[in-house]
Amino acid sequence: MFHRILLFLTFMCLLQGCQPKIPDNSGDFNGHEQLYIDARHGFTLNLPQAWERMTIPVSDSSFRQDTVVWKLESGMKQATLLKVLSVQRTQFATLQKFCQYSHEVMHQNENVSAHRSEGNNLSGHRYYDGKEILYFNLAHKHRYFYVSLISSQPITEQMKKSFTAVVESLQEIAP
Image (cartoon, rainbow, N blue to C red; front, side, top):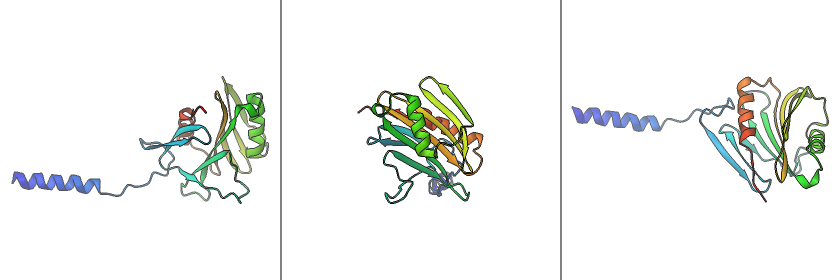
């Protein structure tokens, strides 16, 4: 009798491990994250596992060699996007000049709803072309980074927390 119970419990444990995982489309970490390392653009960061890196064809008008893009399919008409723009510091004299450049190339210089400075970082919240955008401009030793979260739907508090965690995980890879 004991062996049958033990066999049954062992079988149940094995069966439990074989169940398919239900994808988490909330954009939250929920204990599942992926480490992204990009030596070409000089950074690493941690992302929720549900975020998928996009490959944008060179022929696409939204293609930029200095930008990496991820998307989160969450049942909405359009995906929420995370973009990281990475530029050598030697190309811009100050973080403010980089901020002006990043806003022009990423969002055609739209109006800023909020803008705050935190040490070597500038962050804000804006609306452009029907999309809500959260962004951080970060100054590291060798590079400037512009990290943005773009959504056609209102960005939830949980998404803001996850985005902030992604930004805080960004580390520069020294050349």
